[in-house]
Image (cartoon, helix red, strand yellow):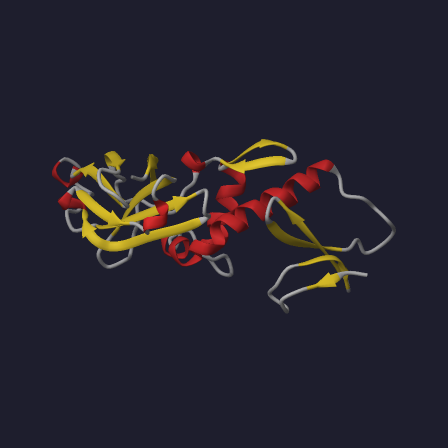
Length: 215
């Protein structure tokens, strides 16, 4: 008998109908029951299930952002979010089963032909603020436009919280300051930057800037 909580979108554990709910490292996920017999899942299948759960747990809160970021890779029923999850499973998860973790420097939030950032850096120089800089490579690369809009993502690992902006500034300004929640003070955040054309048609491959301790 399974236990069921918080309605159809909530978590559950045990067997409910034809699915089994599980909870792993703070992540709720479910799988179908085998159709016949009592076949157990191989370790390879369990590894894939855990990687999928981890990737979904990380990407779901920023699904709107990665739907934009991977829009050029989306096709038919495969959304940008689906592409982001697949990429994360293949490229941005590390560790040995069952102790998988997100490899933050390898996470991508966008992909495309627009030139990425050059020499991006981030630091916290005042309380609850983040200052991000980059080189305006529109001066040296023909396909980099000065009015490309900047995408910034900040992820607070300790609190599992995300902040992002799209278009608050443009490539040629070469810097952006973000005001963060005051309870981010003392926490380490992971910072990502990318660019999108002003008309939203094309994007750049995102860049992992660095991990920063917030003052």
